[in-house]
Image (cartoon, rainbow, N blue to C red; front, side, top):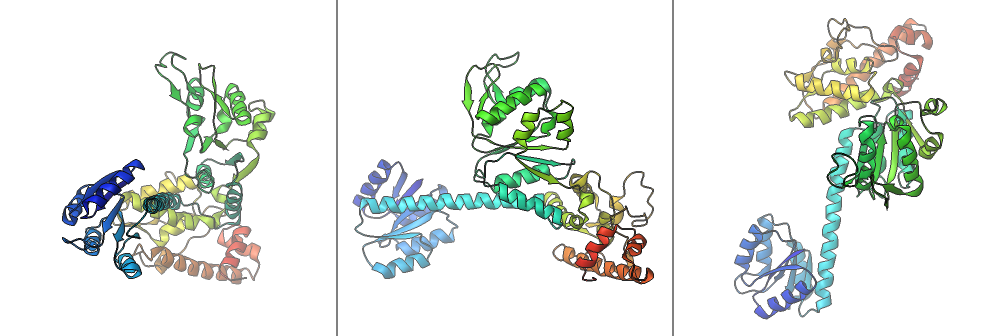
Length: 468
């Protein structure tokens, strides 16, 4: 912590400097408030100890000028005059604390320690805010009952060191859930390390996970820490864990059971404190039955299982996902882009076999290629789909139904577009559902057929739109 002392009393400056240096603080001192302001503007300080009464400039005036120049250091005022009134006046001007003279050495050190703790806390809050912003960007949407169960289970298991197996099709957001578990855990301030076990050649994977010693193999010119050591104290995600070779499965099981790793070519074991999360799109039960995955490792990983449903099984999430992913893409390109109502309808009625990842990529591509800042339905036409005009193609089963584009104006404002578009879409859905129910004589099964959506989707929309 770097401290600047501002006081016209040479003896006090010298005694404070000696006291703080003995306590391992980096200390500078100035007898002139004017020079102190210049120095504080040119050099970084964490805390300033400033006298209230000085002939060249009053301490409160120094504080006002320092704050006016956007100084960020905490300021502690010192004075033998004024008592409680002076302390209140200093606090109103933005002082962190007030030390009445004469003060004891332990009082000064206690004040500085409290200031250090505050700065550490402020840094942690800023770090968490940045993490929250990144988490919001990733847009884990849980409108559907299935995804709400996923979020609830993730939050319940996060505080513990339990191994979690996250399953689901490719692109469903398994790493997003793993990062959420890490951020909600006591290990949140430590590292989150992710490795795709299927993307690294088998002959390099052991070294990547556990590290190697010098000379362990050709090209090993020095020691290397593995990912387990990199994640020590934090969380390691083994993505596509089903692709691990059988020989490495044995070594991974040993690490999970004993909490020790051994670098390639090293005879010494090293303790590691790592929470392991595993993810896979494979059917591990079939792999176990076929001898491709060790049964004992499977049970060691599958202590708690979180399964992510594919996007086609949670249509309720698509609209909110689209809006959230649009926000993320807009931040990346740095210009305002909105979804037209027709585009939102096209998103909802399109199949997404690549799940959230495919939807995310499609939205980013549409944002980049939108010529006038408005995304239209044809931005989501897939090669070979045979679509003509936007919205003219038959919707996918279970996806929804087309909405007449003429009912909606083009989105104009990024701020209110999502809400306005959502209201417009819901109004059109109500009209279409009412018309289908009238045409079917109130038969919901027939109404779902007329709308070309699943019965489950129709029942969900009846409840959502208040038409039950």
